[in-house]
Image (cartoon, rainbow, N blue to C red):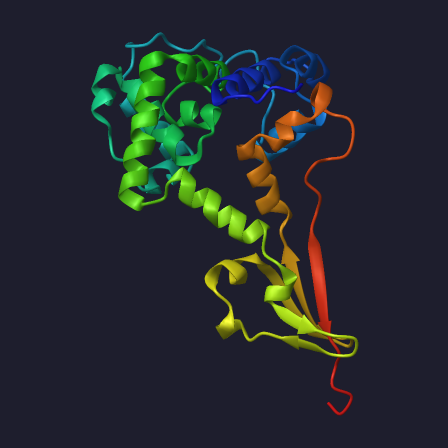
Length: 260
């Protein structure tokens, strides 16, 4: 039975990959398919680390340079992208951390990419993946991340339950809610008649020689639902067999008017 991996484990896998470990070896060690590892690596842009930092020197120990000051320099080198992102609300537990740990918590909450968060927080790119792995396992750091996410959810009213509801609406949208048809005719509903959840499920509306086409792209929403509900973790041996979530794309065609 394949395991459902937590963020700390994924950070550890990414650190192993950066250090040169193969997908095959990690698939056996962590009971996850090579395909899943490959998809994750591609989606997050995993890279192999150089043996040393760009300046040829190992990462300086904590406390030797202010993490927050170094993070500002890192953000400048990255084109200021990190500085342009909206700040998160700091939880009280942030005061229990050192400067670079605090900055890591802030950066991690922006994209949940541990390696990039570590780099933006001032850690060396050469060791960022391992640093992220260690930080995500740190009890005080993980506590601060959880509190920051709770505060953000309260502020934006974007909770896990609400996200699941939206994914379900998109992934389980039915074609019959968009059109009516019989043996010879198809009637499409006007876009003004569609509720927001159905509109979100429509990825393409086009008109060509064959008529008007509406395409529902439900695959991504269904895959995300499968991940959070554990469906994709139920495949034996981390792979094999059919993917429990298949691509669902339906097309409805309204015949073109022969009179133009």
